[in-house]
Image (cartoon, rainbow, N blue to C red; front, side, top):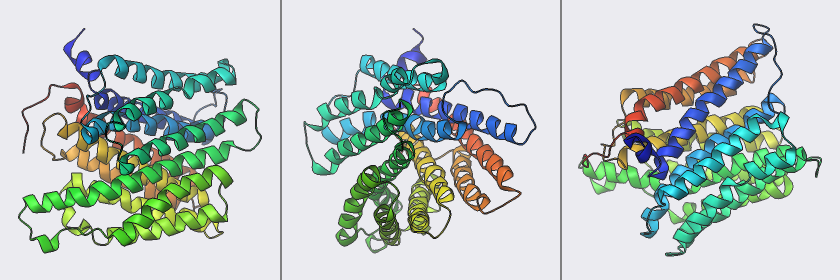
Length: 398
């Protein structure tokens, strides 16, 4: 077996961050092609999947692209948290195969029974959760065990989408999609709130900045943020996009923005790989405020969902995958110019998609351009990170 293939399956972040990038490119291209068909520029072709194109698009960005990024992150981070051995190549290959099988089942779902599609697509997250649970139990700290609950929420949200497809329920699809996205946002709020000020503090310390200038985290905000982050997806699963869920989202967004006010984002502007974290969390705060307000009757809910999906989830996955790929292969934590451009393009895609929802005649054009920006951002990520994800580990760089 070629050395590069052996390396890719030897460490979880390599294969899953590659899968996330490649699938993000494919899914974005497939969505863009359908949008082009809506303009009349190309004839409409019957899709190989059973659901409507917008539903497939939403499902695969949440439970396909983002799930791959989660797989790579947890298989890399949890051993560091617990001191346990990393997953072996056999398990990584199994998990990657299950994830890929789910994507193929969803793509060819028009030719398969809904029950078969559900079984295949729902298999990946339990296997991933079982593995990280076996590692977390070595040092069962509450701040880490909480991610098992959030993985359970992700799985339940996906289950709700499939329950409607198999005909077991009538109105759980949209609830499952929103609950899945909000669970991803909850993970980002918890994890991002932990690492972003810490990474910024470390960078400022290395740069010789005085301690008085370092980021400050306040327990009076961090604890409510944790509680709200857990309550939000739970509410979305239980009661859907109702007033309660909207209030929770709006409150978490305000709390998140308040937390970030003292995290020194201005100083982080000089380091793209660092400001990308702040930008993703800023999109989280903005998106939660917009979505919560929309659920309460003020604003466009679909536009707000795309601020969360593209700006927060898309932006933070690029920020974390690039940082982990560089750091865990001995490379300096400096984003190449193409990677820095990818961060900016992802944020631009989110803002354009939000702004375009308020247009009339130009709505479809805005969607197409936003999709093009997504594709460009993912392509630049793959170009910039390909050497790290497929190449040899280097001697640790400063």
